[in-house]
Image 1 (tube, each protein chain N blue to C red):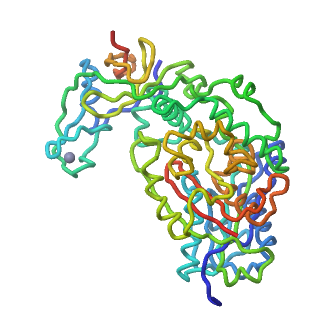
Image 2 (spheres, rainbow over the protein chains, first blue to last red):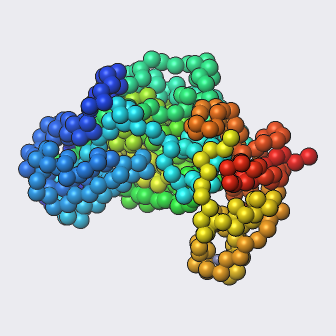
Length: 376
Length: 128
Ligand SMILES: [Zn+2]
């Protein structure tokens, strides 16, 4: 196996999100944040910068400037993502595919966002029906997810307490993460006392808006074997999208996600019961309810009971968003969830470490569904 | 006060003219009989371009609903109710609920609100 091209994540880097959140700076550039994360990832990997032959850039306004800023002047492959949360999983799929195909030997995946400092408004982005929605004041993915969640409650009896318990456990995880933005533990009382934003969703169902940079490096298992940390392998990846005029589907993405299970778990020869933890895109709490059912962690319609039983907590059956996720660690549009998966597999997650963590699900559904199995 | 209003285009002008006449009007594909929302130049299902505007009953049931409690548009102070309605003829549409208590599966009918700014907006009220 001397030429094993199994893709591995070998370097991770993230700016500390908490301090950046507490210190707004309109001059802070997304490029600087991304470069900071990139240099951390490079140092973490033990690779030399000249070994990086490909770059995937998320959200930054110019991939040219980023590459020039960090001195990556000759590349075999470069690509740019506009940065929405539907794309983070696609960056990892792209990198892994390039590595497997021999189109790249080391891919740097880099993301930077100074949205809080420059007061970017999320949620106003046009969708195909915006011209018919806006007159009614209907806007934002949170509103669409709120609508889906109320329907889910009607069809399956899912209680609002399930959303509360997600927000509470994810905050509890963030309390164990020194870099997280929101670290003060919350209770059900806090959850239900917080105001509605778009009813049935309350303030604590919504992700944060914060500044930060995230980067990771992907290379072959062959190269990974002689680097600083044990390699984290990308065992399998699968993507599926339900394309339509609205954000969301009438079946809560159930069939979209169920349809990619075989492609995700099959090649790795494992199932949802084998996962040690999961990092799932939590732009809003209902996304987690829908993802858990769709990917087969619990039965369809069973997420409410599954969550109320505490299965999603640290120490439970499948700890969820161990870093604090988008709700409490920081909203880096999926990128920081991948980095947390690597930390868990390396045993570097400190007080929030899942003991003996060997297999992690990294899943996004917003609305493109992308899933990766990462393993030690 | 409504949120931002669109300028009718060549594609959806009959939709807005229908609203002004007090009727919900959508295109039906002559080839596959699919009813389209939003208005289009071509049927997404069969690629047919023979689309005929058809008057609907203006009735349906609430698929789900939300209440905006935060202000997103300057002209629309909260709270206001947005419903997603499954029309009897099939399509799902978004609008405000302006009468009756919202509930999933509650029967609704379209009413028409003149914004005074050039467009008449379809809205819904709970029936009965
Ligand atoms: Zn057709």
